[in-house]
Length: 98
Image 1 (cartoon, rainbow, N blue to C red):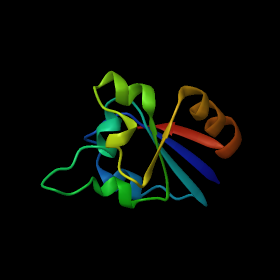
Image 2 (image 1 turned 135 degrees about the vertical axis):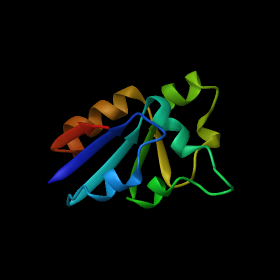
Image 3 (image 1 turned 30 degrees about the vertical axis):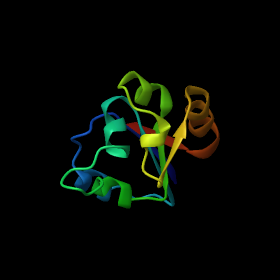
């Protein structure tokens, strides 16, 4: 199964994501979840960024928080709303929201 996860909370426990199994796992950071792509705590990036190679962040949500794609960790691909729609319909069979 190809599973897409919309992650909207920057305090989500990485254990929840660790229990998800899929042949392809994509994490799309939206809302306050966008902070995970940009903010470092104690000099370290979020452990969620180590979970999968398919990481995305919604640019519009970054910008509404005063951040830009230039602030994003290199493991995360900035995407627009239309890119997210394409991911949902073309790349992932199931979508969940955390």
